[in-house]
Image (cartoon, rainbow, N blue to C red; front, side, top):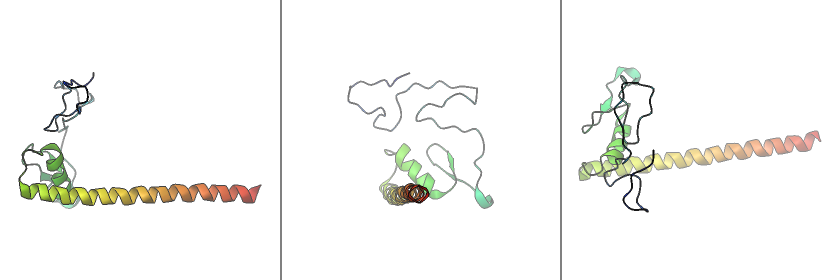
Length: 125
């Protein structure tokens, strides 16, 4: 199943962020969920018994406010207000910084392992 594109160079998602892939409703929980559709199989486990944050537009539950803010900015960009957009941009930049730190730490770990094995090989042979 491919994307239904009008223009050859068009992005697979429309301007509203919803996929153009047709998704048929399914009663079987093991079937694949289409892009842009979210599963609502059951309750979201939240630490400490605190209530989960919910998206005001689609009522999807989240573990914390940061995830809900990111969801609103990514899935509902045309519906959010300027204040919500600013909160989304802050959360997005913080998430981007955390991902960058993780990538650098992972690269450091890989390099450490590589050189450890290299030195071990040099000592053994």
